[in-house]
Image (cartoon, rainbow, N blue to C red; front, top):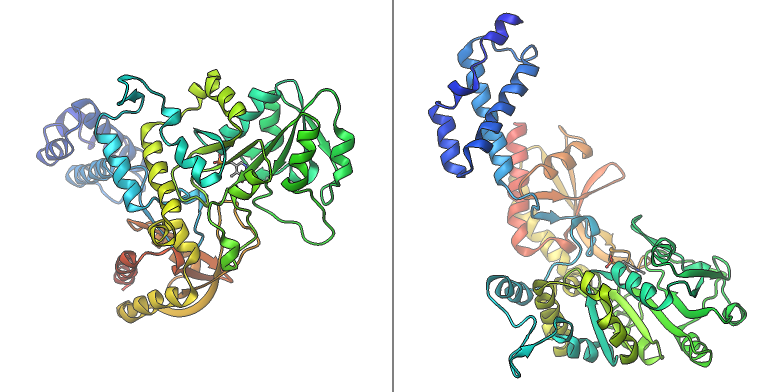
Length: 466
Ligand SMILES: *Cc1c(COP(=O)(O)O)cnc(C)c1O
């Protein structure tokens, strides 16, 4: 063992090694960082020296060099990696939720690359406000008098509660005290905002009279939370904005609805879900509504607050507006995304979220057929086209099942778990689902241009096996 350790080349000697110098050259990093890679590789090999079957100094050196190469490649490749989504879930929170349209990406790129009029009024040559740049577009898509954009919808909820209901009572139905994705609980956000939660009703039923009886002198707001990620079936009752907005008004309270996803497009008309359209809730008389930018909307991460001008004006002047404000790239992406809703269905075809949700089973099957026609050369791996069900995701429309099409993947040499792991380790990684011990790819969320890449990933795995 001692002998073996003595055969490890010292770092200063390795630093003169031409293959290591060429790594330094290739990645153009500092000498300090490069040296730390070498040090790490030496340390690794030292630790594993007994389990490695090498004994000559040359072999050990080659092992170290190959490890430095690996460390350098990993370091150089982006941490935020592109993946192919074969889960069929359109708004996949773990995979980054919405993808932007090409036009939105172009606008983001311009905003990132150049100076912009973010806070400069080009007409008056005075200081402008980022809060008004796309306000007119939000007004148009929501029908609200005014609007402000913040970092995400969780921030929007916090902002509204903190501003209007600090140390004041907010009435919320017990059936709506939801937790979303484990990290967002309405009750926790409320606690952070110092709003005083007044829970009413039961998990399955909250009556109009429950609201009526809960109102007292300290009440400031009635809040309705969209139960985005679950739904209760059967013996239920909840109150709609149609009755709650007038009730709030009669009692001089603010009526605020956290819409969660906030659809600007009426998916119900295409038989998809029961998601209310933001415009309707605003029309019903909500003082304030908020919703995410990167769920059903199909835009960047953002929280949009829309509603009566008197309340939005207060938000705009609040210190928290500065804390929670969005950057120019978000505004650029949001502008482009919102315009597509105003242009109509043809423009919406370019929005990946909208397009993926609306895709028919036949369209998806065409992609699967294309895949199956070229994938038969993968030895040891077999594919079987099959209908399946995809979900909208992102805590949106939990009860909706979109008829889809995909492939079941079988291999004599690999279990479903092994297939899953091998595909996840490809670059780009391919993420699928395991159902009934079978690995499955749903083609709803796999783009035409990704079919080739998916086939070549399977080919690599098949080559590796044989
Ligand atoms: C998703 C969701 C949120 C949080 O929105 P983010 O944009 O993820 O911060 C808040 N409320 C409801 C009802 C939601 O569905």
